[in-house]
Image 1 (cartoon, rainbow, N blue to C red):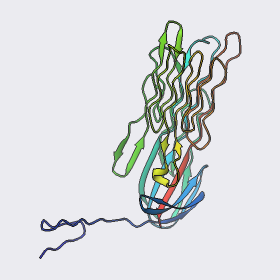
Image 2 (cartoon, helix red, strand yellow; image 1 turned 60 degrees about the horizontal axis):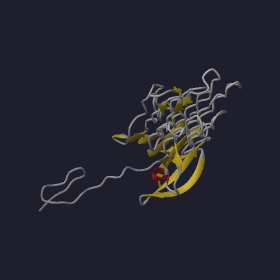
Image 3 (cartoon, rainbow, N blue to C red; image 1 turned 90 degrees about the horizontal axis):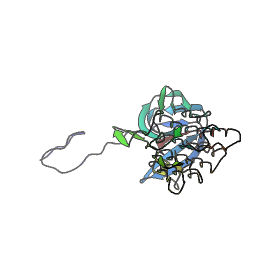
Image 4 (spheres, helix red, strand yellow; image 1 turned 90 degrees about the vertical axis):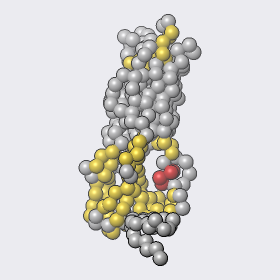
Length: 294
C-alpha cells in the first residue's frame, strides 16, 4: 500500500499533487470583468492613474506592471545632422504576491517629460517595479539608444527576460546607430517585447522602436502590446515607434510622444539648419493590472 501526503509523493506512485493558492478579493481602478487565462478565470482590475486597491479578502494577487516610457531627445540646431536615438519603453513586470486585508496605493508612473528623462516606475505601495525606459541621446556612429528598463548609457539596453520565482521582468536593449560619410542613422529604443532596430545610414533611415509585450498573456482578451520603444532619426526618414512608442522625426521637427498608459518610449527629434531647436517628445505613462482568481 502506498500513502501520499501533501507535498510528498511516494516512490511507489507517479501521481502529482498540485497545490493552488487561494485567491483574494479586491476592488479599485477599472473593473475589466472576468477574464480566462490558460483555462483559469480571473477578475482583472486596471489602473491608468495612481489610486487605491482595497483588499476585502486576503489571498494571492497577480500584479502586471508597465512603467512610464522614456522621453526623447531634442533636436539641436548646432548639430542638425546628428541622428538621435529613440527612447526605451517601460519594461513589463509581473508577480504573484499575498496581500492582507487593507488598502494599498497603486502607483502609475509617468513618462519621461523632459529631454532624455527616464520614465517613472509603477507598482504597489512601496514595491515599485518595472523601471522606466531610459531616454535617448545624441547618436553618432557607434552610439546605441537606451533600452527598456535601463539606465541612461551608451550603446546598451535594458534587462533581458528573466524569471526569479514568481517574478517575471522583461526589457530589451536599444538598437545601434550607424554612420557612413556624413550620413547618420540612430538606433530605435528598446521595447518590453524586443530590441530596438539598428539605424540604416546607407538609406538614411532611423531604426524602429522595439516591439511591445503582449499583456493578454496576463489579463486575457485580445492581443495588447505595451511598453514599445520609440523610433529614432535618420537624416531623411525617422524610425517607426511600436507598442505605444512615438515615431522619430523625419528631416526635422519633433518626434512623436509615447501613447498614454502604454509605457511607450518617445520618438527622437531633429534640428533644422537655420531653424529653431525641435522640442523633445514625451514618453507615455504606464499602467498597472491586478488580477485574482474567481
